[in-house]
Length: 170
Image (cartoon, rainbow, N blue to C red; front, side, top):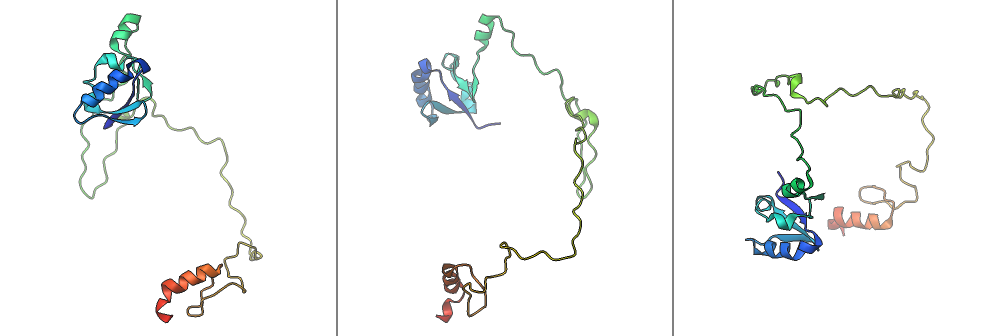
């Protein structure tokens, strides 16, 4: 469960909501100029009049009284409920028992096969590739460390290496 619920009160109720928020102990903090981070435990204690028209975690708050006035029936519970299953227990060092199929909801269907063919392996070429600019071997004119023979792409890199690895030689 989330620790905080983000409430953006309706513009006409923002001052009243702020007064309620600052009266709480500890005070409810803001997370933006017009959004409050209400602890989940305090959200249920908020006056419903303050919440009407507010955005709660990005969704418009609809009170049960508002639904009743408009003749809207509240949403029904989901039709599918997970079945009561026996507790699955396992023993240390043993594989877990298989989960029965009825534990998965009706939307748990196998994925269809992909609509593309797998890629074929590239043919093996016996000739080595020609050297290119991405070759990691050092440039013959590149700076290199006289103590360990390591090559560097920049003089600055060589200087840093000498300070870190060969400082006692200076």
